[in-house]
Image (cartoon, rainbow, N blue to C red):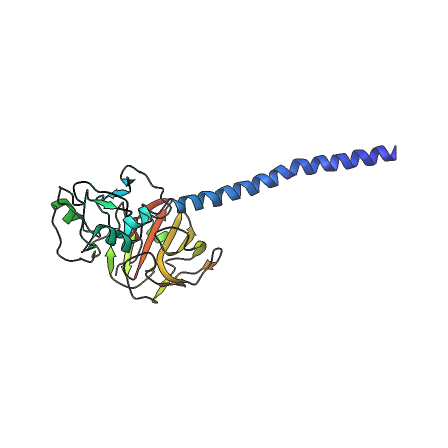
Length: 279
């Protein structure tokens, strides 16, 4: 009888453990899936902004070429295709990197052939943020910095996060549906700081086209990203405070020293200037 009771007790204990184990595994699986989803979104960002998957392949890599879209720059094309800016310049005999034309076919490899030349018939120009020039079809004779808009309406929820500028410098590329953020010019080695407090969810160079990259989750649906850094001073899992230095400004995976800065609100790219204080 004692043996029977012991066996019953042992069996019941094993049954309870069997019931609770799937719950633990389910929790772990859910966490793993969340991490995998974040990594997948980051990996798809190369051509259309951080966390944003590539939305169209129709003009990307067709027969080893790329057709320039409105708002494209050599930097954004490099992110999209994985071909370095220097390589794009050499393959396509580009004398002025700021003057690529909408509709222009760019070679992505030595074997690629562009029929009828590389220049588009439309004559419109895709420069670093000058949308008015693209609409008029004007050709700029020299690179023009993308000056910040004179008036930017603060976002209604900007007070929830109260960001600070992540770097000091001139804005050389503005927010567009293509850039997904802004580029701030600077000098290699200058400090890059967290725009707000949060937790580092990514720090490394594994995301093609963004060089040394830091991504910070601030909670309440806010995420910021800091690309092209020279040196990273934080690692994944670190908690950071507002204005804490997280990197040094660099030129990794881009043509000149700059910080590419993006803000996501509930997964949607938003203009950082609407959340940053007026300069």
